[in-house]
Image 1 (cartoon, rainbow, N blue to C red):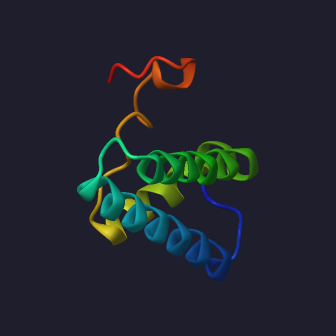
Image 2 (image 1 turned 135 degrees about the vertical axis):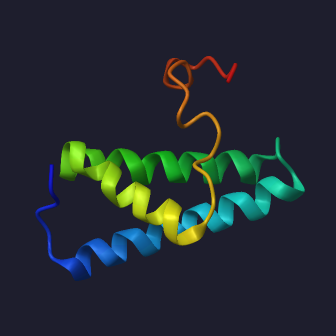
Image 3 (image 1 turned 180 degrees about the vertical axis):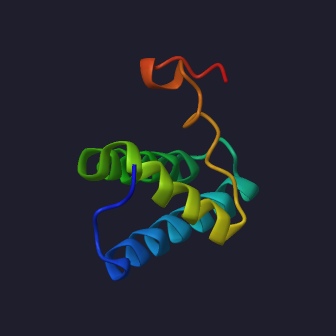
Length: 90
C-alpha cells in the first residue's frame, strides 16, 4: 500500500520517529530497565500505533524510513507478539 500524504507530512513523521528512537536508545544504553527507558519505549509504541490508525498498513513504510534514517533498531518488545498482551518475555 502506498502512502497517501504529502512528502512534507511524511518527512515530519519520519523525523519524529528518528527522535523517539534516538531518545530511547540513549536512555536504554545507560539504564535498560529504568523508568525513562520504558517511558520512551511506550512513546515509540504510541507513535507507531497512531501511524497505524491514520495510515493502516502503509504506516510501516514510515516506521521503516525512521529506522533506516536513524540507523537504530525498533525497541525490543515492540516487535514481539506477546508484548501487547502484557507478557514481557521477548
